[in-house]
Image (cartoon, rainbow, N blue to C red; front, side, top):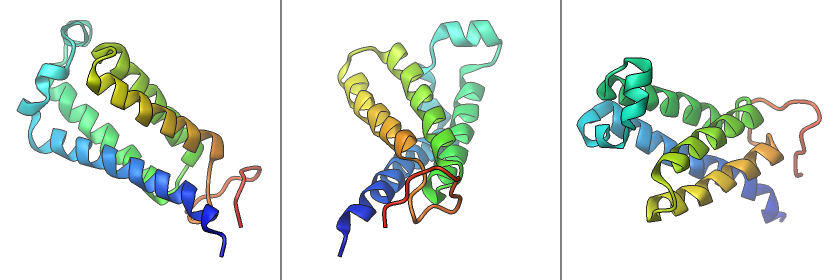
Length: 130
């Protein structure tokens, strides 16, 4: 039995769970998250911190769902990688930032690997371990 074939789906679904949890908590309790929104973002966009948290929560839930089901895996993992990069740029090399670097590189790994055999969409040219 080739257990290696489960590694890509485990990391893909695990990362999805993290983004779903954070996204849903942002949607249900914006007040817990507004302090994480940089003041410059609200000034630049004219969007309130609460609204930005809601938009971010929708973004994370939507793309986490796509990642969980393996839809557009490379694109979604790359987009979430860039999202994590932006978060790390804001929080810096704090304990939260260091943890997020690990998540960011896990996303990069998923982006490089692409679809696995348990993904809904499989693009020609992506590696599938059998």
